[in-house]
Image (cartoon, rainbow, N blue to C red; front, side, top):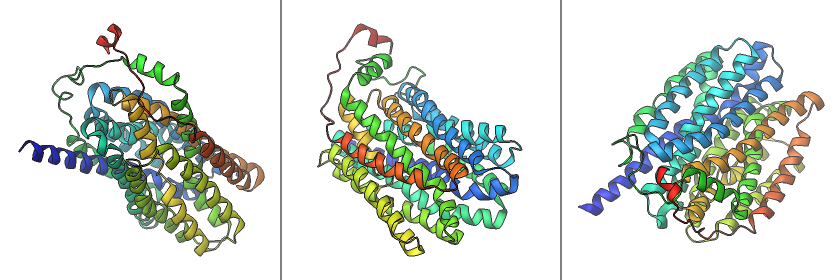
Length: 411
């Protein structure tokens, strides 16, 4: 009876966590479809939209550390409820903002804060605490695969919303969908968190500050964090700017929608495979392969003629590599430092990812407006992929000793 309850608990955590990530990441991955409708209708340059997306990614990273700390201390449930409300408000603001400043505040700050409360750092904290270590990397792969399925499911739907409802009403429809995160959060109410506001009943060997300071002093954690910067640069630049890049190449808008959907579909397999392999192979080797393979894929894409077929092949290949960095990166953090402060430390690593995202999406808009081309950013994505692959190789994945100190009693 006890084992059945345990299995049910694991299934519940996986199902609800996957549902949250499907909605949150699925909505986010379609934002590139709004670049041209919004800028053309509002008379704004592409840089205005790109800057708001850049602020969104930076906001996501900044609030991710705080959201992770709150989830570690008070449980994911409360954090997810806040995130659902912020997501709905941000999407409504994105639809109705009349000026670039308000657009940046709603699309950027509000939605970024919402994503910090409803995506991987918070969900992976629950998985880390509720699922045994021998299945942890696999479970993280399942949750990441759900986010990828959300992209496959939501991006074509968002394209249809824009075509049928207009871009403003399409965003309002998404705002209503974002509120569905709230009932899914109910299934992630962890024992020991919802009983009181004092956090988990499990004793803590370190305070949040001690765990954070130890991570900053650990060379392998910093190498992992630096490589995650490259992941953010590459995927957000491609996700936001590829629809416009393809239109500039003379391809129909449907090609871009299909390309983003293919990325999501193939990343279902890529993220699941990365999570499953993380239980058997060195996660640093998995990460190095992913980053080097991305550099190769982008190089081949730019060397070959841009046709619908080449776009679909590139999207499928990049899809396998897209968010497949997420399970091994977060599982490595858990392996190094345990799960007591997993959401916070994963949030810090993700902050580096989001600085990369900020630069990737903003440089895409800035250099396009300046040079009339995305070429420089494509070349940067290749060079950074090679660098990240090399950074991952020296990472040491073994557990770090965490001494118990009196200061931890107040953590």
